[in-house]
Length: 309
Image 1 (cartoon, rainbow, N blue to C red):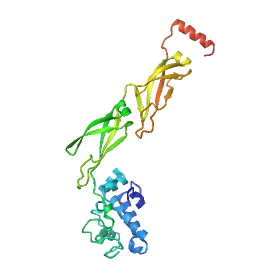
Image 2 (cartoon, rainbow, N blue to C red):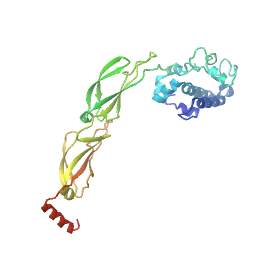
Image 3 (cartoon, rainbow, N blue to C red):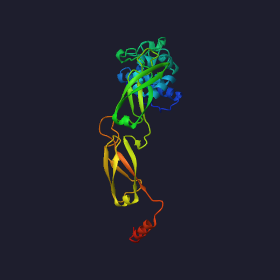
Image 4 (cartoon, one colour):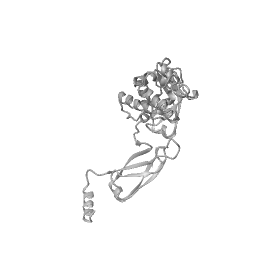
């Protein structure tokens, strides 16, 4: 049941208390138990579903794993036998008042008898296809890698050293273009060792871009600041801009440009990781207002003021 929402199955909120979860399961177990719905195969499937949800959410550690890694990843980590380990369905149903003989030894069609004996602690739905069972893999690891702007624009190869559980792995990792801060790449089988004999978890490399002295980075867009004179802002001008990739471009500054106004140079930012184009390069204009005027400049400004400027 990859991607299964156990909270939704039991009809409870994600912050539900253990007693609320137990109460919800009790209500649904009464409704869908196979012996109360002998000719309804859908009810039998539903009972299996709610029992699996309760087996996870009633166990503090399993619930924590489910909340931490999400439903799809949880299903990869835990087989059906792992989910129902230490889950005695027979005792639970008796606690709910079903009685010793409720359901009989066979526990309805397609159910394993060990659900009531409680001795094995395995999967009470023992007839499930064994191919769906997966070993519990080790925990995933996350490694934060500091990268320069140039490295994420061009892509690079980096050597990383990861320490975990007393072991050290030194890996050579290909960093793709466009791996901006917060983006991750997965290195399969380089996470923690499974304590249950399953495969190792995965290693996730997370990018963190080092601050650049010239460019401000926001996602795949880049902003640089350029100063122009007041006269240039009023009359317009042209300036040279060096892109992060090292290309020199001539940018037209239109007359009447405002202080801290932005001009966009399309597709000259950071490449997208999926290879579909790039972000944009923005040029923020800072107008250099003179702190003092010469006598000549003052007279000229006064004449301009007379014209209504």
